[in-house]
Image 1 (cartoon, rainbow, N blue to C red):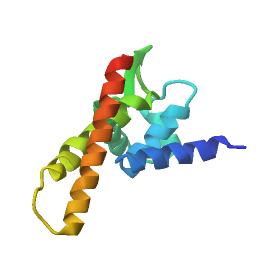
Image 2 (cartoon, one colour):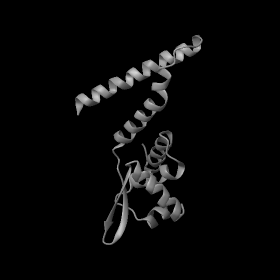
Image 3 (cartoon, helix red, strand yellow):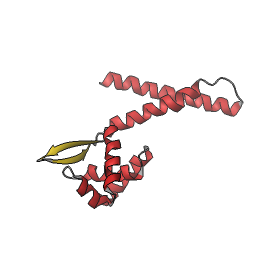
Length: 138
């Protein structure tokens, strides 16, 4: 059976795989599993990161839409947005635009390059189909 520490580790690794740094992944995982919003001090107690590092990480996580903050009795508290779909979608779109699409436009090269270009076109078409499905669902 999966324990809370295992889940924490899985969330952290997943977020690192999606491009977040060590501190951002760790802080996000703690916030995602917290039963209530946390203060900077509470985050520091659990993660052992410095206050400046936590502020920097939270700023990035808020920019990415993964963390939100709110005032609670004069204290700022942070909580996670556990809807991963938007974050996954943003990463997928970035990969598509920055890497896959440009590779589909390469027209010359040897057989190996042609295979890479063809595979890139297949991935691009797959992503386009996902976009169409998403438009039809929402």
